[in-house]
Length: 145
Image (tube, rainbow, N blue to C red):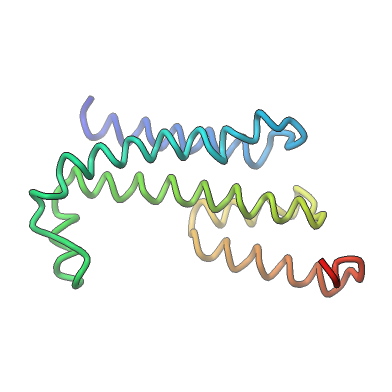
């Protein structure tokens, strides 16, 4: 596979995970495994392969912005970084969806929060925790939860 094909396949796989997370019924526990475990695990294996194959030869690292720039100057490691984002954002989305489910935040409210997590990671996290805080304050039954 070319790097472009891996990029496309990993994006498609992540999108499947997000579609399941946002639209599929969560009452089916086995289906929840797709966005929360199966897709992130598959992406993690792919990421690990790229890191093991190319990291040592990159000349880059994490000690300075210049080292990170050097690290990502190699297309294989740039792709690994992208796959890292796809895997972690989906895992975080699954975590956030579970939290929102437990306190009764409706799926129609969750959808834009999860979309923000998919597109802008930490912005979605802020929205999710902010929404959860509002629900907990506004709903007395969650005061002790």
